[in-house]
Image (cartoon, rainbow, N blue to C red; front, side, top):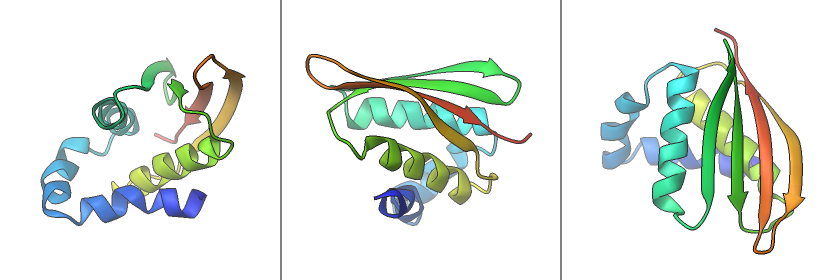
Length: 115
């Protein structure tokens, strides 16, 4: 699932819409992650995604999503695939916490990158 998820953005980037949108993603890890949060909000409006900077080269991504045991692997794949396709080095993506909600799961991920 990780490898499949890592291919999502690179495949999208090759499309006509992707070739238009990719330059807007930029090459700053924080900007890429911010645009990825926006994409999640547009594509899956029933879930919530928030990004907060926690250091010079790290951020915390909090999300409330549908239940699924593979979500952390899928999320990691999407983030790493997107960063790689934008020409940025692979960040470290770690699951900080996971918890059950009445309708799904809440995850907190730490994302660290090299500047």
